[in-house]
Length: 125
Image (cartoon, rainbow, N blue to C red; front, side):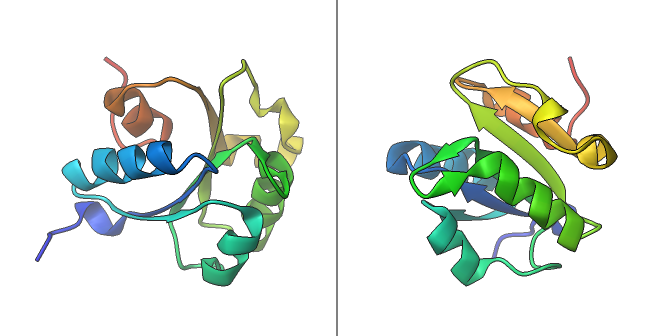
């Protein structure tokens, strides 16, 4: 049985199945529990406040905006920390000012180390 890292539970939301598998592998190697969803519809079936400590969400999903979903989720779950990802440069100003301190952005492609830093689980090198 895996001894997970400090009770961290990450929901990964990305419509690229290969990237989803790779992110699960990254997080698993760091002893972090993770679950994937490929769309906002799939996410709604597994997400509820308190179920995850972190959300790693692609900005553009086939059925909506990752930024809009993340803003709503951060409002509903005061303990959730969010990371928006995109292949294009983005900033936390996509989120309401009151939520930006609980979010980070990560531009693809990124390394496993950069992923942990963005999640707030490792100090920058």
